[in-house]
Image (tube, one colour):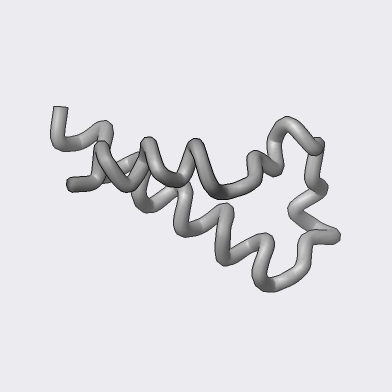
Length: 48
C-alpha cells in the first residue's frame, strides 16, 4: 500500500528539493507535505 502511495506522491505532489525550498522559510503546508512524503517513503522502503 505504501509503495502505491509513494508512486502517487511522486506523480501528484510537488518536489520541493527540485525547487530548492529552504525549510527554515517554508510555510506550514509545505512542511506538512515534506513530512507526509518522508513518512510514506520510509514506510515504502521498510516493506521491501
